[in-house]
Image (cartoon, rainbow, N blue to C red; front, side, top):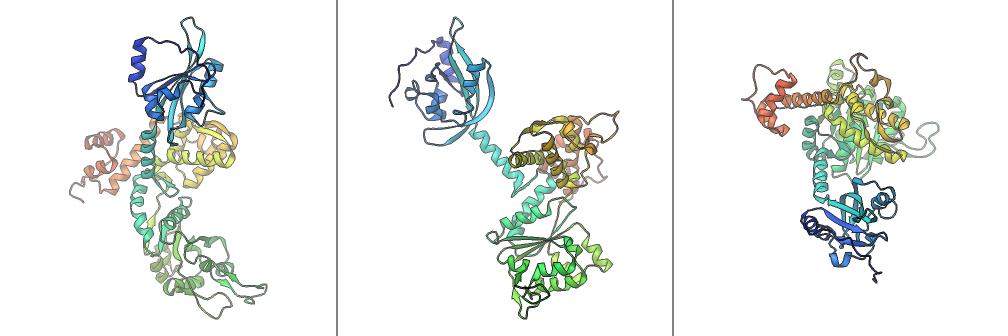
Amino acid sequence: MSKSPRHTPVTAPATTDAILESISDGVFTVDPEWRITSFNRAAEEITGISRRDAIGRLCSEVFRSNMCETDCALRKTLKSGKPVIGRSGYIIDEEGNRIPISLSTAVLKDNSGKVVGGAETFRDLSEVETLRHELEGRFHMGDIVSRSPLMQRLFEVIPTIAVSPSTVLLNGETGTGKELMARTIHSLSKQSKGPFIALNCGALPDTLLESELFGYKVGAFTGATKDKPGRFALAKGGTLFLDEIGEISPALQVRLLRVLQEHCFEPLGGTHSVTTDARIIVATNRDLAELTRNGTFREDLYYRVNVVRIELPPLRRRKEDIPLLVEQFIIKFNHLHHATVRCMAPEALSLLMAHDWPGNVRELENVIERAFVLCPDGTIEIPHLPDELTLHGSRSAGPVSLQDARSQMEAQAIQTSLEQNGFNRLATAKALGMHKTTLFRKIRQLGIVLPGQDGRSRR
């Protein structure tokens, strides 16, 4: 492309040039017409564009950043006279690759103090982004996010469970994410290309639940003017998730047992059996073993659904996940509500860490959604939280400090890992990724009570 006459670049001392050439951050300057007047070695390496090709061109042509058109940091700096520090964005290099960067800007003046352009430094965050995604991969499985040792243990076995055709029983309190876990298992299974069909068995009366499960034929009852497929038929080639399985009646338990044993069923009013290949996942917040002993849940059905059992821990046992979950919900509700909430204030987060969460993850999600109604942009503060959180504990004691919340989180994680490893301290230190002396010190500092036997002989 043709280049317009260049403005004379501001001359910098030789020592300054040497410094700019030696640093790993890209540095460039522009004149008042936004044409590049200097371009250091690191800028060449990050962008893949040589200094000779960059100088004299518009900076927007060289960088092709997501901020060039509407949110140019350098333009704001030249307009306000104030620097921008550490803004995130990306540029497009010579080969068309998107490179994440962190940038800072400043006004460029000559020796007399006259503004002659602007200067920008930018840092390549590609390695940081790669590491962040690797860490996210460790803390994510499907749509489930967790750094809790309890959940990490589940993350290790879920892929193996998913590829098995066996029936899975998900047990956990209300709001622990049983349906989310079922969807994750489905997404990792051989049935992932098939449908995922969910039904809450506790939300329907017995007669309606039967027709929902098995469907019906025309004329099966008054008002049945056409055939209707049931959930077993709709889940063909996929997964059928039956929530609150402990709520179904004994009569319906018999029909469900036959489907699980023989993989076939008869629609209401039908005369022929229909086969099903749907993977079955059931869930309950009740103790099915206790219901079986009481005679309210069939023993043979219990053993049929309890092939692979997964216990989902309540949120009060995985409080170290609260910051991750808050961040995930902020991203979700920013998208749903077209909001611009950035984060939660540390003081507000400390209150979340101190709460017992009887409603578990669902309760936490509702708290964040409520905060979005009161705070559609900026930072979620204590006044945006519900009274049951802000009035927690005595008023004289004041809010829980961030340090106390962090200590509670550490104590919970260490206690859980100790239990999982039979109180073997060396195994626990390895599982937590810390040195054994660090673990011993934290156990003393946090006041964690250990049994008389330290578990060294256990494996």
